[in-house]
Length: 180
Image 1 (cartoon, helix red, strand yellow):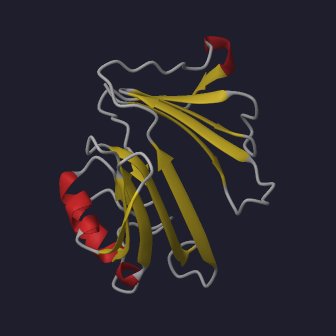
Image 2 (spheres, helix red, strand yellow):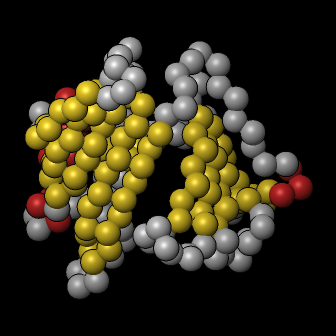
C-alpha cells in the first residue's frame, strides 16, 4: 500500500501564502487549503480507482522509464555523506510528457509545442541501498496556457522510509467534509 502526506506553501521561503496539505491513501484523498471556504475542515474525495502519485514537480519518482530518462540527462554526480549518490541535471517537459500521460499544464491540458521546451532542473538523492531518498525539482512555466505570467515551482520530495507497512494518520471524521 502506498500513502503520502504532503504540506505545501506556494512561493519562496519568505512567502506568507496559505498552507495546502493533502493526505492520500488508496481510494481516498484528503485536502485542506487555508485559503478556501473549507478553512479548518478537510475535503474528502473517495474513488476506489484512485492511487497516490509520488511526484516532485513533474517527475514521477516511481516510474522506472521516467527515472531512466531523467538519469540520462545527468550533468553532475556527487557522493553523499551516508554513502549514497546525488545526481543532478535538466530535462525538458516534453521528454517527461512523452513518458507520462498524467502531465498537464495548469488549466491547459497536455503541454503544447512551446510548453514542451520548458526546462525542469532536478536533483535526485539515492541511498547506498539504491532507494530514492529525495527528489528536488525546479521549473518556470506559464501560470496557465497563454498567460504571460510566469510561475516558478520548486518541489522537494523526501522519503522518510521504505517498508512493507505504512501508517498514515487520516483526519478525524468530525473535521472532514465530503467533496461533491
